[in-house]
Length: 387
Image: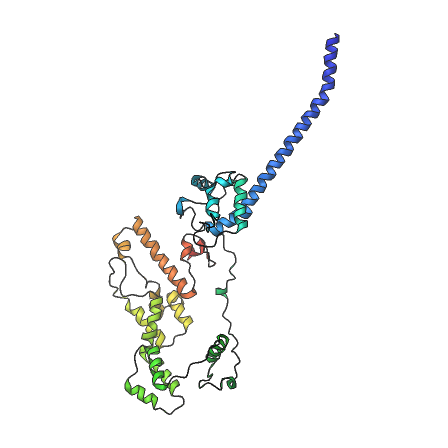
């Protein structure tokens, strides 16, 4: 073995630990960089899911969704965001999305168009997300927020309030006095607002008011004279009972319910054809008012009378409520249901039934849930289409 060979071998023996040490150091650096990258990616994803998505759901999605992409801009998927060109990855200042969300030259932010501007921390979250590369998890899609809380004020039971305690001695300077609980509430609110009661109406004025109110008709001269000259202290109570017993009472007040039920003697739409069999529902409503039918029974007959009260006339007549609304003769009869116009007519008809029922009996809107979970009432699209 030559001296050169021996020297080379010795050099290799000495160099091996150094090379191994270098390799270990390099691997450690790579591991640290990888961990840092993964951590930053995780942080960016957390910012997106935890801070950006809730803002988009609450403030943007109603207008910029896959169906109703106003301004040609949708924010439900990464593909839609990319197509819009509104976001430049890693470049917040060049991203149009931030331009419309921020105040420009002291003017109000352009978006959201109908509503309060985003809070500073909400804009900051979107800016941080864009600066971090606008990462969007694979396959992720922003959906309407699912409603989970149904503890809404409008669904809580009505509680009978305590009648304000107002002593009659406090009202000694007034000709009018508290004669029933409603008067007490009125007087209490008037005192709170610094107002006072009006003087009690004379009998001639009173009979005209109450007759118009309950029947929609004026009293006859003979009825006025009789009431004005009646010495009985219960004359007014007897007058009200007489008017409530009049068939004109149901005609007057049933009219308001028929408006709620969207009743008409014709179908509406283009041809507005006559409905020759609409009148039985109209008469059912008038008769129900005149018979002082309990409201619960009145509601049940109109929603499910055939099931709850089978074999009874009102159990069938009340169902006129479901079909009282407008009906598109062309869309249902002259156009095949297989065509798009026929499908639209069928959808509109079912929507009208669902909407009218919930609007009338629950005093809530549900029609918005055709396209998205409702913003102001606890209804989802699943609720709507289930109905």
